[in-house]
Structure formats: structure tokens, C-alpha cells
Image (cartoon, rainbow over all chains, first blue to last red; front, side, top):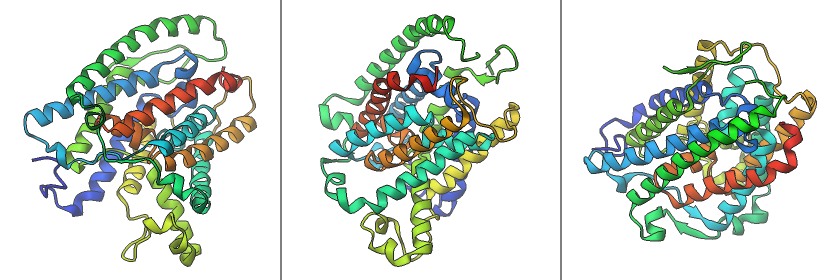
Length: 200
Length: 178
């Protein structure tokens, strides 16, 4: 029966109402987890706060396993859900640029919106930067249009690329996540002992 | 609800694993209802396209990138991700009010750097994240989180590369944070 809107169970008019409600839940979870603070977020890269890893990895495995259950019970038609297309080269380059932007800015787009909401000027400035960056990208697009469209592999899943069934990936991600949760617990303890610049 | 307590009036946050379960269930619910995941950078893109269309309509239609998102029937702001991102702001505000984190405007930075440095670097970081998200077909929400959760190859690729490269760059910018 799912996805509900593409299958016509919920009329399309409700689309934007649902968008706002899901957005509110998203913003609430991000803020309540501590992502309105850039210093909480970047802790994952210096070992003093692994909250990003914990929240992100938990979310990915819950959603992955959940989708498999929904599919198993016949609640969702996985053929009808959107699969992000893969553009190999542009995605790799874009992600490296985003990684650099992440370590400098301390936010990603969604988290910066929640930072603005609680009064963080650095979140606001980061968002202005996003706007400028996308503007610069759009204006100079003709220069790299060919590269932008290169490496198109289509809307492929991990299974399409590797031939390995989805549940194996869910299982592997779960084990990797559990190992990471366990290992980072010790790293965090050690790093926190030697850091004075950050209050916990 | 398990709330982490910390010393000297530091903010109280959800237990990260509890927050993660909630976020995972939200992604699942979003995919179940809409057939797609969550996002964030797309809303800023809509804002950029709207600005160009308002001040230079011909230019927006000529621009090979922006013209993809211009339509005759409605404004580019009339877009799912724009409404969802408004929600992100209000959801953040709600949580901030509930946990007492909404305060007057301030800049958070490491004691080793000034507010000015922090803001300059935040702006540069935003610009880079904005540019990168266009090449990456989404940011940490749309590509890395929702993409990975739906087993998209590109999603996992973006997730690993963003975090991997941020780790690689982290050493060089450590003075900004620790």
C-alpha cells in the first residue's frame, strides 16, 4: 500500500502540510540531539563528542531495517520509492567539497536551520554561505555542465551495483555501527580527559 | 526519555541513540508516506532560483542550471523541500524552547578563536557546502542520510566521502575547534 502519496492513498493536496509536519519532527530531533551546536557536531572529527556518529548511524540502520520489514510485510512497494541517482565523479568531488565545508562551517544545511532557530549567528552566516555557494554554482554552471552530468549510473541501489541482496548491507551496517559505538566510547573518554577548551 | 545531564548548566540533549532511533523512524515514515526521504539543501536552491527569477526572469530561464527548476505555473518556492525546511526551523525552535536553549543572538566558537574568525570560516564553509551539495545531488540529509537509508549507491558514496574527507581535513583546521 505504501508509499502513500505516490499510490494515491493520501491526496496530493496534503503534500505541503505533510512536508511541514515531517520537517518539524526533523528539526526537533536535530535540535534535541544537540545538532544546533557546531562544536557538538565537529566533536566527531576530533574525538571529543561522537554524538553525530551515534545519531546518524543509529538512524541509518533503523531506517534500513525498517524498510526491509515494511517490504517483508508488504506495506511498501520498494519499486515505487525514489532512489538517489548516482553520478560517480561529480558526487565524489561534491562530497569532498562538502567535507571541507563541514569541517570549516561546523554545520550541514539542515542543522544550520535549527541553529538559526535558537539564535546562533554562526548558523545564520553558514546558511547565507549556502545561498551564496549555490548562487555561484548556478551562475558558473556552463563552465562545468559536462562534468556535472558525467558518470551517470542511473538510480542504482547497492544491490544493483554489487549484486549482493539488501539485507546483507543492513546486517553489515548494523555490525559496523555497533563496533563503532563501542570503539568510540573509549576514544571519547580518553580525549575528553585532555581537553579543556570544551565544556561537557 | 533519557536526557543527558551535564555540569554547569550545559544544555540537556536527548540520549544520542534515542535521538537516532527517532530520526530513523522519521526517515522510514517519510519514505512510507511520500516515497522519498528528507532534505535540506534543496530549499536553499529554491531560494536562489526564486531570487534570480524575481530580479532577472530572463536570466533564470537562460541559465542552464536554474532553468531546470523554473516553471510557468508556480514559484520555485512552491516546493516540498521548502515547506519541509520551514518545518525544520520551527521544529528546532520548538525543541530549543522546550529545553531552554533559545537565547539572544550569539556566536558559538572555540575560546582559541574570535567570533569574527568563526563567522568568516562559517561563511566559507557554507559556500563550499552549497557548491558541493549541487555536485553531490544533495547534502547530508537528502543524499547521505535518506540515500543510504534507501540503499542508494550514491547515498552511501556521499556519506562515506563527506565524513571521510572531513576527517582528512580535520587535522589542518583543528585550531578552529580544539
